[in-house]
Length: 236
Image (cartoon, rainbow, N blue to C red; front, side, top):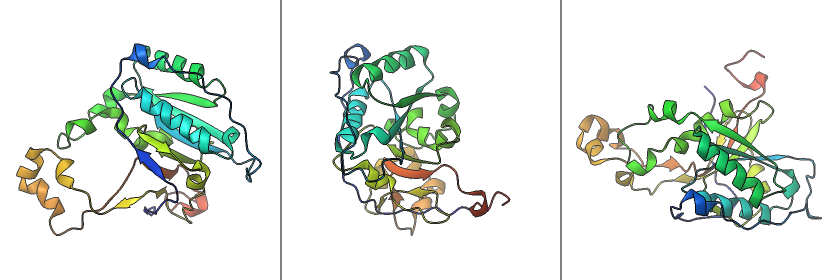
């Protein structure tokens, strides 16, 4: 089985709560300037792939995240954004107009997630704020993104970067690991699940005698493909 690891990431991010907004007002953003590679851009030919979700409700947070990534990157010309939205035709069309209007110099690609299929797989035991299909888009990156993308940094749309994303992308995954993410061991898991989950001993006993740790999927680096010689599931 491919090894899964959690690593401490050497980048600082600030999380914030996005305010729900109407799509009509979400389209009213100023045009961002073009960002150029700085003289400190060492890996001038190294492409950094970034995956994020887009939806009308939290679009303001997404726009702030994109701008912060570009602003703090030493090699902004090397960034490739991969945006995932639900398969609603109207929503995808409006979002696809907003991005090039606000970031006319951005290199990006749009993908549609079949939210109907994903919705049927979400557990009823989690709190309602987590039952949005787009919350699970990160699980489908290997299927959505083209095969040429071997590694990708996934960011939630409620984070603002205050350092170079290239540092995050350079996190070593070793020989066989497929994921790097911050580890948290002080979470209150009672806020993550419904009262009915905790009232059912067959479910709540899952945490009995265990150290409550998890890895934060708001900012992770994923290896979407391992060399065949290093992947135990594939012949060399």
